[in-house]
Image (cartoon, rainbow, N blue to C red):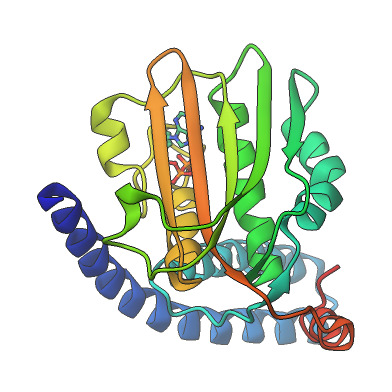
Length: 258
Ligand code: ADP
């Protein structure tokens, strides 16, 4: 429990630090992107256009990174609604299969009558995609990613220090890949921690997963064994509220998602 407390404090401190930086960077990048965009609209000079669009691409990449950092540090704006986890997972199955390639197959293991969870559905999709891509990266010669859902009537014993009492929905993403060493496991949620090398990993995927889970009133756990595989479980608070289809439609239109 002591180690877990230190870990939580460390994550909190990193979140404060990166959140401040990311927030400032986000504002700067908004100005940079806006100006480049304007420049592109105003000039016909091919050379200038080429340079400006290169700069714009870099700026947009930066904006994606800062958005991920903001979501880790809980400064992102979430719009939680009652969500059917099975529906979200099922509706993503094709996208996931396409994103992770042919060598890795996706298996769904969705329990019957899984409760609704109170989360931002778009962020949940981003998180599941992050987890599936990590699973693929851990299985370079192929394998299976299994996504499972189940109901938890009460907080699991190991999580009582972290979660409010109540019921939770668990979403599990499991792979049969390389697994993590204890040293990697200890740092996996830290922003910018990556073992994937230059230009490959950003180290922001699991940081975002962590931020999403905590900000949703839930948490996330990793169980991993070297050369056996990794199981990452999201614990998301159950809601008995019913999804309001009109509100969801309005939200989807406002955010341009789906
Ligand atoms: P990135 O994927 O960009 O490296 P993440 O924050 O998503 O950043 O992951 C951090 C590190 O955790 C990875 O570099 C990898 O070492 C480890 N990791 C994440 N997911 C898995 C997994 N499913 N199996 C093994 N290692 C993993």
